[in-house]
Image (cartoon, rainbow, N blue to C red; front, side, top):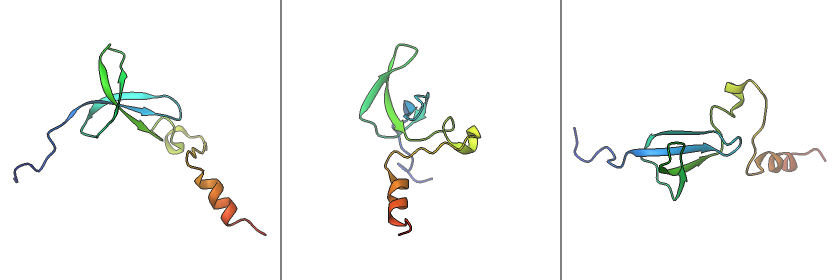
Length: 82
């Protein structure tokens, strides 16, 4: 195998779904700027998600649209019948 191919900065990171405040702790090498205090009292890097398995319509069975950037409204305005 090639040397220095895999990242070496694996560490525990909290991923937080911003649409329903669900959070989970796992190992990752994602770059983060924020931190959060976890249930065990330790502070971990925080990575914010727009959608996770707790808010995705496929997994929840509910047709709840999560539109944080207004993309659906832009589409409707652009292709609205005149």
